[in-house]
Length: 312
Image 1 (spheres, rainbow, N blue to C red):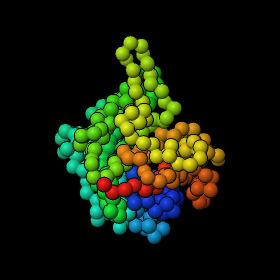
Image 2 (image 1 turned 90 degrees about the horizontal axis):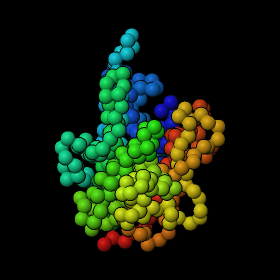
Image 3 (image 1 turned 30 degrees about the vertical axis):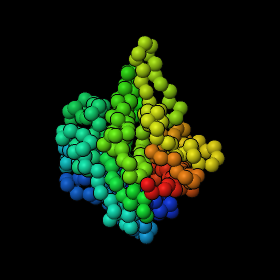
Image 4 (image 1 turned 180 degrees about the horizontal axis):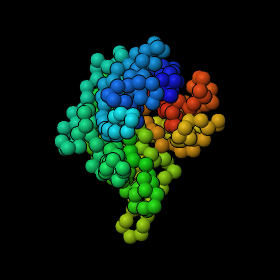
């Protein structure tokens, strides 16, 4: 019931009124080429419409496409599924936004609209053929007041994508290594003009330890890779000791009480803000559930951070 959930998600965004928003798993489901009743909805259109209904005006400023498949269903028609990650900018910020050219970030066969697919991805043999479950990143430059900000949005593979294979965490580790290489000093995603803010579902928490197979064989989790690269987890700068759990509710979103148990959705900054960070989790209280169906707005909670930095 995306329209109902979009209203709840829009309420979360409208209440916090962020300059920039990173979204993952922004689906577009169509039947015979058209959107229709749920589930055949365009998540992005529904969310932008719901934001406007809350008098919160945002624009899509960057998008990357991860999945685009068509399935012929006998007696039903053609179902098309598109999965995207998206960056939204508040209407007063949008005119200042420019996309960081993906040609400077990845090879042509890995480029996707305004972003890039990671080189290492998970694949699966399905009834409709082999499918690559692409994970991606993209970046924009924006002006927040007088402060230039580079805003990077990403979604990394789950840690145990193949639970029976102890080496499967290598996939997300390799994706994180690719991203960190681009973000590191002198890399094409680094900049001297202002902070770099990295947001996303990295499917890695502060509790994830290095996996040691003995000798020189180790797998380094994405969270630690970002920390070691000098990026600052803004959640750790907020007052108080809230665990900030963001994942995951039941897939049907109907669990009566929240069962969030991990913090895998993050906001990292390349610079230490000059004042204490105000950071919050949204969409995690029972009062956030949709009306009338009583659904959690998403299987993940959202993360919001407000930082005060000085322009160089």
